[in-house]
Length: 288
Image (cartoon, rainbow, N blue to C red; front, side, top):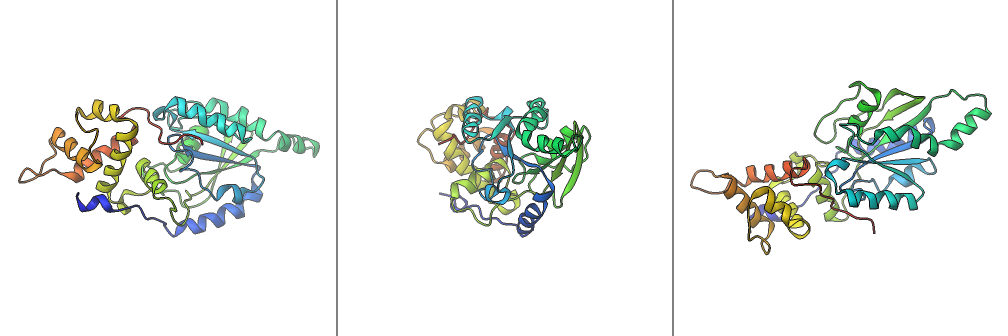
């Protein structure tokens, strides 16, 4: 077994403690909270501290990247949230899929706020929503899509939004963007892995080769047919992740001097193709 197979994800950038404070300080300025999670791992990509932080503020959940998640699993999650009294919408923020439901759902969720404003003679008062989510779940893409212009910074890597920004998105709504939030430590290594699988943890602070091996271990148990179809390999059913990575490296011709496997290149391909949905529509979590 290569040494890189043993390494695990550890990450907590210092600016995230500041983010918690910013969220708590900003809550009195908003009427509700929009939480963006990754539809492939809704539980792991939801900040477990959020419910306590927002207290009784109305919450709407956007299951982003639904286009590369298992549609059946996404439906189960929408039903799950509904039972918790929370509206959830399956969306793809880059293309705008599903976002037509956003304003109507917000008005339903904030019906009591709208009524209170009308009673106070402020029926035209903008409804303000805070947008939260862990890094790389699509907050900036969502705001850009809703605003109709690229007014928020977007990048395909974790942790690029560092300060609060307000955006008028029309239809009587204003959105407050916040930096991505993670918690101080991953109590469950599987949660850390899932976040790294989807790119919410910076690749620079993970061991990409070890990560790809653990991803292949997971996919070999849940979606072996997708590994076979994408990489045109067979006979890996009882193999460990690093052995499957070797097979992929050989099949793709990722070799270095002496004919050894270029694990780094093979690992990058596996992670990138999973994140881009090239292996198929895969969800790694289901509701309990």
